[in-house]
Image (cartoon, rainbow, N blue to C red):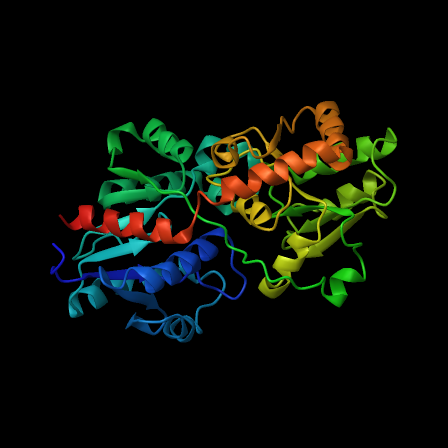
Length: 379
């Protein structure tokens, strides 16, 4: 097997947009790890607006994806031409980083289904297009499961959801954990962040503003802690993540009287994420549902204590290295926030455990397990 020809992989890279969400980050990290460590086992190609391109280095990947724009992943037009492009070349497997895959393909197809939030908890994202078009979303997921040689997901929790909701479309599922995405740089807080945040005195949330992310629950718990005198007066709450006009969290913060304590940072460029993590007091991640939960690992990678919800896959990722809380119990959540902020012994213990926990995850491991899945798909 050592002399076997490398697997010729085509990866749909339409999620590598200028403003990446979770799927884009997954795609970027996985592709770069494949290029670093798996080129003896695979020949990597990416499908982008310019067609199917061979990539052999990180620079090739950057150049190949330069024309990708926000929203390209879910434009049907790019899937219609993909089967023709696959037939025109010699490839072994197509990997789509979400459920959106071509109706017919001349090679085995693999999909990564990160989570099934719209089906498990549609009430968590009431204004999402996937929920508004729920029958269409369900049909696409079902078709992806039926048409995939194998399915990859990020956690055992997501694998259980897939099997539970689609028992008739059972596919071979590989639960492959992810790795941290933000590399520590040792940089100070950039001037624009230092102008509104005091290093070492802000609790950090990183993510979107959809209701399932629990940002509203976090604001209410933080406001309760402030009202009860349980939160030191100089501690701020920093909300990093692109502002979503469908869910106005700024308005909620103002209603709760947090205008002077809560800082909304909107989208934070990649170069600023490491110092934002490194100079925080801790990460607070109250999400009600996650397929994985990358910010937990990024915070641990930067030596931060982590407080997160006890829901979905988060306990699976955190292990014993985070303070778990039920975010829907506001009084308990507020008390835990106070303890998390002021208890130095607890914080030190969480930091130590986090340093140990994060070593168990890496994109090199993710890439190796993904190539194993490719081999099984074409066997």
